[in-house]
Length: 371
Image (cartoon, rainbow, N blue to C red; front, side, top):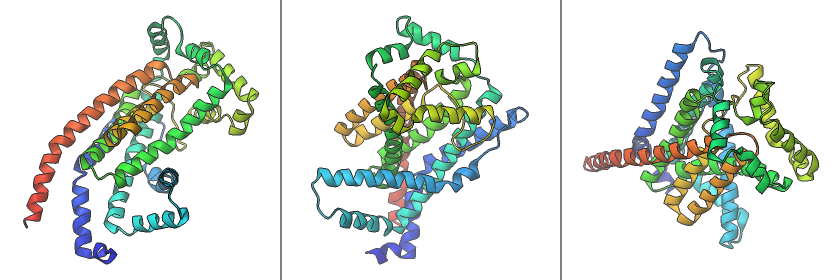
């Protein structure tokens, strides 16, 4: 069986067939590169950051580690739920089976490189936001938040309802679980999903969301976020009570002390990278729209197509992330609302595109089979 998979003729044919199914994804990633280049050329006189594509390509191992961790956790949970025995034997057997399909591995690495290219483009646009459109909409979004929520800032409502420090710990933890779930979803749709339409729609939406929502829209709706407001404008203390409250909660709860107050540490890291104008990995500050909310909504949309019960759970998780983004000072509430709406639109467009392209792909496969 493995020998058949490694047959050079079959291997080439399988790789070609699988790669051609992802044509819309290649076109989209190419578009993100062109748009990024055009934005750079137009604004090169004011941009101080260097493009980091090679840095992200070199860090493919980081993506692999994240995906492998997510897969291992899901595998372990699945074994427990199904009350399977011989955990380690089944674990290594599953790994062996994964690496026995050479064509699948080749296609997987191509898709992984596409992710790195797209994320590099997104991160670059995020970093150059203050160079080409300085943060000007924070006050506007603050006012929108109050207008929508009856004259009260949403963070006040959140901390009134979820007043305990344990809730802050829970929201911090949710942000970390988000990382595992997002990379787990990418692994699933890149490797496991047998429904090509759902897989392509998810990957198209994933790339589109990060680049167009997190990059292009973030430039047009330039805002730093509540946690950076008092740092950008020392005289603006609108969100200082929130930041002081979060700091006090970290100091008062032993769980948050052990956990390290990760949100405040990450916010400090991002601010240092911004103020020193260095291009550290993952650097760049931007609030509108919220990519945590966008990616969580997309995760729920994709999962619902695969398993409705899991999809409902992930919709609940998306709500948690939306609350957490406000509770922890990362975002204005409107950041999440805009992200929700635009992500759903992107998902619908991706489904439409895949539906149209899918018909052509089937015709091409039939033609190849008749040769």
